[in-house]
Amino acid sequence: MLICAATNNAGKLKELRRILEKQGHTVKSQKELNIAIEPEETGTTFEENAKIKAQAICAASGIATVADDSGLAVDGLDGAPGVYSARYCGVHGDDEANNDKLIADLEQVEESKRTAKFVSAVCFMLPNGKSITVLGECPGKVIRQRKGTNGFGYDPLFVPDFVGCEDGSIKANTQQLTYAQLEDWQKDAISHRGRAMEKLDRALSDFLQTAEK
Image (tube, rainbow, N blue to C red):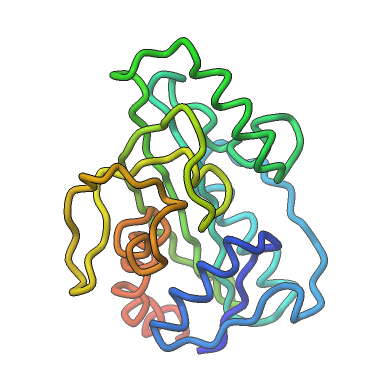
């Protein structure tokens, strides 16, 4: 299936494309389809924001569209930055500034309260307006300084509880590697976005059978 990935975030696009193509789909980015709009994320949940983006980009592209809204929820910050993860520092998409603010805000937080989870809501929208939304989560913790370069956003500060294995299974993250220190296949097996996309893949066939009628 030809799918538009509703994002202008290079790191997120790379991840969505990698996961969707493994599932047998062909992915076109907003840029490739000459769609420059950036829908305002006015929702109060990840699910609401994912649907807002999917709806707007699907209308503009005229093809099936997948949109993700994701973020980091830290227990010691009462779930922040949450839906404001991309603009935590006050500027949308400034990864370095967002990470700096997170480090500063957690400076006095004890280790037991640095537990966190990455959350991803993925909405798949058809041009007829019908949609399906799934949610994926990855538990872990936030460390005090960046580690690794293979990632984006808060990846260098987030240590997941588990990592993927070459045989497709998962194991405890005994080496305490961050998202940004993992190989792509290690991350995809346990990531919040990977989990959500797995759910979407399992549900998509039944959804299409009814939604396209």
